[in-house]
Figure 1 (cartoon, rainbow, N blue to C red):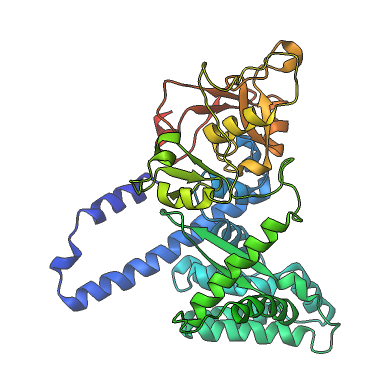
Figure 2 (cartoon, rainbow, N blue to C red):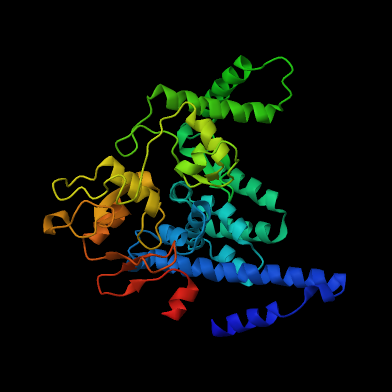
Length: 408
């Protein structure tokens, strides 16, 4: 690993723009192959951890969750990496081509469904020679365009069950949402024909009901507005399931001075419940038909320390803890507030008070971990975002990121 890092350091010192165009392209081609080889070793290492349950050493249940928290991968990327590692155990030819740099990590992810548990069972029942399938997939991946590989895998899976039972259409449903730095979101969903028909019918009903004369919005804009309106309707009706003892609603936190200052836009002065930053002007717009709750984390304001007479955390303290901690504070976990419990750092039964200072936000899994030997401590002298420290039962601290581990 030291030699690899030294090579990368030397590579970073080179100036690719100084090369002639043909050599620049050769450099890119070479780097692509090297990236493939490095991805292959990463996938192999992740599979070893997945098999041994190494993530439990850091108090994390699965390798996929460890990759999200400690590696800062998106949920989709973490799942893809774990799934690819498992798939390659059944595909030695593909694994060899991957290790040589001829196949990409993205191609391995496309191939993985061909060796899912269901596909392997169907292949075994039909005496399919998996070695031949492996060799064919490796050849297609190394020599054919990306789209062609997906077609081959799809055709192979269809051939395994040409006359099989009607599959459950809900199993293929997916919805992923990516949040950007400015709080906006983009997403992708995959639905079966029936699910897609329901979504289209609901959106189209709102589109057609709210098309004023001279509407210049594009079809995409109309459907996006319809989706937001659909959510508005559902939230307003109050029929959605509870989130941690309260009905789901839009939450925005803002200083009272910014809310009252109607002359200023106040960009980025308010924060939503899911972490987006919005302007004071937009917050005032939301407040027109909303409920305003005053929260003062101050000895002269709302009394956050309610003493020992209450073990259950009251709503005003929970709101304050959510505001301060923002997510599960266990190292490597970013479970949202509505998944979390408010943990008494000094147990209530041992004299701990129900107060902001004695509280920590922990998801259910890590709340259990803390009650079984792991420990979370708050360091108020550390910079914001780094104030919580997590310790294993043996007293060693769980650190996130290569730089922190090497420093330790």
